[in-house]
Length: 135
Figure (cartoon, rainbow, N blue to C red):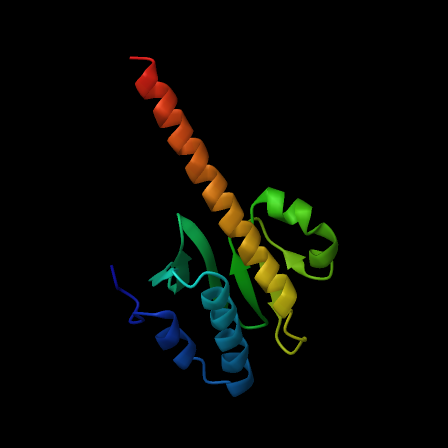
């Protein structure tokens, strides 16, 4: 499935020529791997993608910002105050380059995504169990 030349988040980050921006993305990747040590890393939509009990989080570097995806509406609601200083898109949040790295916020967003994934997995399992018992 590799069509964009990057095999991993590390390769993607290594391609960023601006040292400060590269350092920011290295911090994002480190937080993800720290919060979810068993996370599977790949490249999807030409940006680093992480799976943990389903799609966990993506991040990407753009001209004026770096961004995290996906943010569910529940996450946007739960973190409304913390995210109010940033530009939100339909599926993510944009952090302007050169602003202080929001380490605690990034960590909390990932933790919330893990909780969402595990809850969705539990619901799917319960549905399956219910369906099997109704035979």
